[in-house]
Length: 169
Image (cartoon, rainbow, N blue to C red; front, side, top):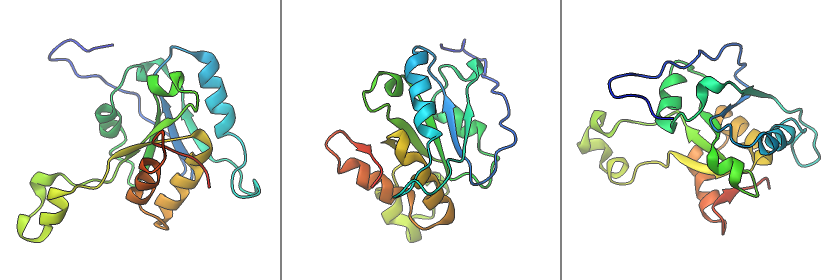
């Protein structure tokens, strides 16, 4: 779905998210079966022995259909406790692994950086996205939120996989 030129999409506000809830937004409504499988996997306990309860806020509203990564990032910009958001997009619905798009909400606009001090970051910016299997969402969210690991570490682990998808360890 494309917006007519000059019009801006108004997305619904996301309310009630606890900072420890992973945020998953459905942007593709082409396959309810795949979506239900994703949600089922997201709601399973996680951790080495499944000792942690699944904490996830799922946004399943047609108003989000076809939104781009940039639109989603703009919509969640006000949530100061959100470090990563996950999108269930067309790729998710068509992928055998149902890999979600993980997006970092914390990134610097290169135009705002002083090249004297930040030349390396300007030349090699941090990754902004990677794919993650639904079973890996909780680990990514919790570790990035707590600062145990950085988004770039997870992105590097995903890029090392043959299919570029992060799976739980």
